[in-house]
Amino acid sequence: MNRENEHPSREIVIPGDLLDSGKLKAGSGTYVQDGKVYAALLGIKSVKSNFVNVIPLGGRYIPSPGDTVIGKVIDIGPSNWLIDINSPYPAPLHVNEVPWRVDFGDTARFMNVGDTLLAKILMVDETMRVQVTMKEQGLRKLQGGQVMEISYSKVPRVIGKGGSMVQLIKGMTNTRIFVGQNGRIWFDGEIESILFAIRAIKMIEENAQMLHLTERVKEYLESVTKQEGASSG
Image (cartoon, rainbow, N blue to C red):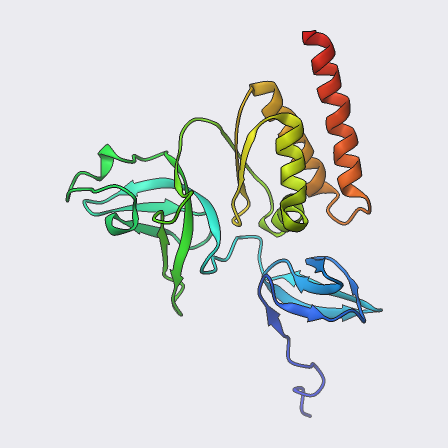
């Protein structure tokens, strides 16, 4: 008996892959842009009763070239740093891929173990060896601030269409926020404002499929920032 035909081949999709052009409804692990449904995470495409879903392959972030990530330095060599990017795969950052001129053996003077940085995935080969860069505009060492981690599959929802959701949170809490594709988010600002922003993002993570989520988040932030204004006034 040929079991091949019994189970159609399981189609593996990556974030950004087009899943449907408007016939099916967006299910879990997907997002909608211009009426089309796209994969929000790495996983297996599944269609059930008019809904297209992506079943995650695993809970850990799988790096993809071009992703902006928030990394942590976990080890230092004479000509590179080893970066934890919240993935099963460590990511070396070579001295040629940073914005500073670093002499051999002088890496610790620029970044040390425990430092946080905003980087970009430069390359991933077939054996999942990852290389990251800090050479593009806006990439840098992140001084101070707070880092939280969410499920990387919820990152598109936190960013929102065209960056709308994260802009709303930044504007209403007056905090600086960087969202990494790897599920790490960095905040800087007043401690109380950072807490409001973190609570708003937790709300998005827990209710990612909710309708009118943007309005709910806005209502929450309006209520807490008004209270704060009243108590400081």
